[in-house]
Length: 444
Image (cartoon, rainbow, N blue to C red; front, side):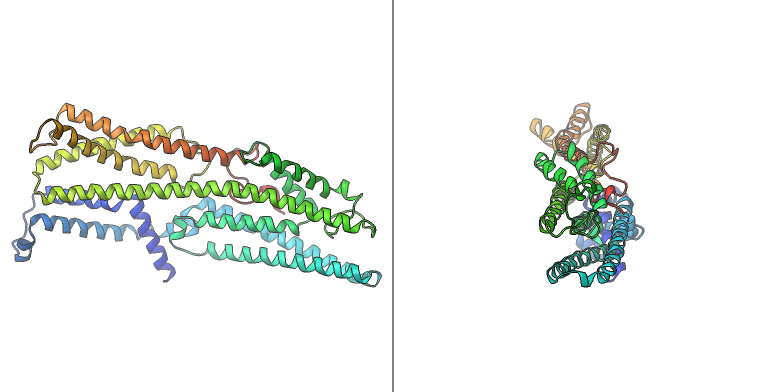
């Protein structure tokens, strides 16, 4: 499948999500059913019947509109235009990783040249240790380079994944690279990163935050220049004199310090990424709910048309449906005014706004049906009256009570994500989307 095909397929899914196709088909079918246009005198049309022709016509018009509306939406099936903020944040994090890799390589080359000059002065054991250390650093650098290449490749791709979990998956890959590069970064950069993670832990809702504080502080103290003057650093990028007596002890201490920082970063990344992923899954579930609700509405329309419902009765039913949908939509918009917009929710708020009028309209339609049939059986069930209009309004607003429960849960998740950002950050991201990826203190 070509890139253009990937974009077009993603655009089709996007249009179907924003404008649920069954609802569009139901609306067009009802309009065609109420249209006074006479049926053409064709034997095939007479054989199918006017009701079947209306249903087929509604499906054809819906399909054509769907295919046409997807064309201008193709641009949103790319990493750059689907979510520009995430795209820029990922690009910033990749650029930071590339800069840090460049610094590490330059220092490694300088260290290697210096080591060649003093090679004769080193004993065989020391040379073996240096070789093993060099190999370990080369593996880490290779892994980070592979991650950067993968992210850059994915950012140039197109398709449906950018409308689903594409960004969250890339942030996971950025976090993995951010954790791995701790092993080769200069000590001053590692300390800066560790202090940023300390700020993130301070007021976070991470369950093990208290247990993570102690090893993080110990790691910062171990790698700090003041402490390095009294111990040996096995990393050529760390300051401090070396001695043969306590070399092995200080080497182990430094590795443990970097490992502790990686553990803390991994815990924070896991905490935030799981919640970002939860928001995306909640959004997708709501979009599926919207599609199913619209589908059942379309089934009701088909049943009414096949049962040859009177056009005026059908028009009255549309009045009740749209009354419930409008009341539900205004109620949803009123409740959404208190939503925390500082933290990005990957379209979850918009999904609630889309699904509410669909559920509210269907609730008003079915509710009025049950209320009227429970009191009397009449061919004009959807008769416009003050009582039925009140029922439709109340039932149209009722789904907001359930959706408010879902909203409160998502707000709790967003609050947890926000808690893992430093107190001086006004948004859920650092200078380059740090709450989803790296910390801004890691750059350089």
